[in-house]
Image (cartoon, rainbow, N blue to C red; front, top):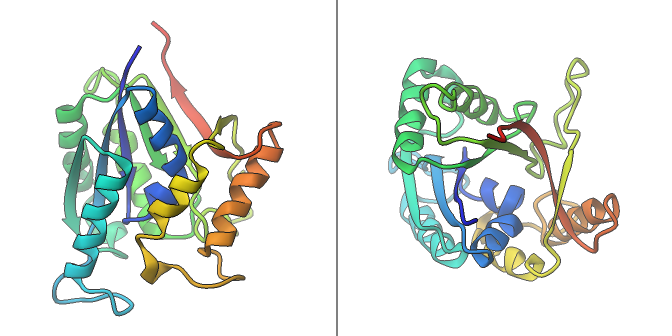
Length: 224
């Protein structure tokens, strides 16, 4: 049965790194996939030499490449979500969840080293309660290179996947989608190199007897 999927990303490229192959697989299976992009580069504050206009071009190109049914952009400033009132962030994300009515939601891992990822997870947790958002039947957490694997808090359990999705048929297309964000890509050993993205897919595949995979933590599933 086809389903509606919502991928929530703190920053543009998180969704491609974390579940780009799975997004392509969902589309191949006839699912409708929406993208919720929480932050955007602000016109008055370019980041790393990237302007708001350049990022906008990248976002539109990625949306077309991955075939999102719609892109929902909250336009919040990056690297500061933890300073926003949590209730405001819950309401903003919740309005999109209410509108899209997804059965499956993808979220960043809360133990990621970037505070924006933790803030998005926390807010989205409040925006997926069954009695307010009854469409949500499953929540999967994805890993993000240079964020998930750089988390060093010894009090957390770390990213421990319990779902592996075969993406061997979609790996090259995922890499092509990631290449849209060329300003974020550097040669190895930089963690967001093309080689590292491929290597992680091969590693996760080897953990599950697959040639290439994306790994997730299922933190909620309802079977009615």
